Image: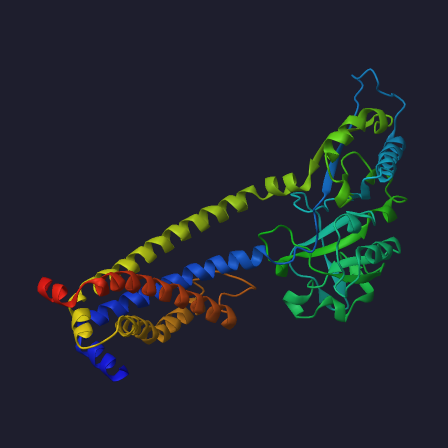
Amino acid sequence: MQKKLFTQIRNEWRGNVWLALELLVVSVVMWYIIDMLYCRAATYLEPRGFNTEHCYRIYLGYLTNKSPDYDPDWDVEQWRDDVLGIVERLRRRPEVEAVSLSCNAHPYNGNNSGCSLQYDTLQSSGFVVRRYMTPDFVRVFRYQGARGETPDQLAELLEKGHLLASNNIFMRRYGIPLTEIAGNGFHLDGDTTRSFTVTALQPVRYHDYEEAKWGYTVCYNLASLLNQHSGLITVLNELCVRVKADKDRNFIDNLRADSEKQFRIGNVYISDIRSFTDIRRSFQQSWSSDTQFLCAGMAFLMLNIFLGLLGTFWFRTQQRRGEIALHKINGATNRAVFARLMSEGMLLLLVITPLALAVDYVLASAELNSWRNGTTLEPERLLLCAALAFVFIALMILIGIWYPARRAMKVQPAEALHDE
């Protein structure tokens, strides 16, 4: 059967060449689309390095001298004590698991402060986000150590004055994970007069659409700076809480109801409460919209490819009703006829697949496809996306041949030959 099939394909070479060219173009386009969608999906699904479920940000405000409740004797020291008092009252609420204060630190945050980290001759590269935080911050957002340290263990290290830094902070420039050198002898911002002990963190991503590879973080204990800079604690700090999962019901409404009686200290009060679900959605709106638009465009393009390829094989099978009838007259079963038609389509696809893979490789080498992990050419990714493209096209061929062939085989051979 294989010999007859090759002979038939060779005899019909003109039509098959055009069909093979069509399959080649479709294979390359499908690979490009799948590669783009794969990179977006793989990046989105990477571990974030934090957890914002059941987390809320509480915004603080202060009364002005226009308010009848304003305390005119209020000063900076009182400001700090009032903010810390609200933190302690929140910590005592039965539904609250952890409370933290921070500066430019919480996830999905457009405010940043940068720093550099040095160890011997090693210098961090890229933008390193410096996150000032109280130790409970890592409990609120459940940071994890690169060596398996729990949030509680990381909080204890912060209390002791350790720095927490991303495990990949030296990877881009030197290829050295921080776990290999973590310990004493690190310096911040080129200040060699003071050294720190550093513990490696799992990379903390800036948002869901940025690769973990580019997420560089250094965490500094905010509480350790209070003696030097009393003005660091203000109503502008990020007050974040984690609520116990089994008690996270109507937390915002309940806290607002109690805010005036229980959470106004001096001139400081709770002005707003937002869940991190809402903060995340608002912060990532532009990236989410771009991704949705891209996915919709790629889906529309794939649908057109599907219909075009389906139509090609549908029309090709319909035109061969007479041939199908002859096969049946000569004793071929429906299964044998279907297998022959399918084998022809799949053989053409198999012939052009190596050529399509070569074109894919050239495009990836020329950096014309999507970037991920700092490159456009990853052998595993190339083969995976090419294999997925092959499967999709094979399914199109299967559907394009199966339905019209099934209808043609229901027609009596004499009737099909008469129509011819």
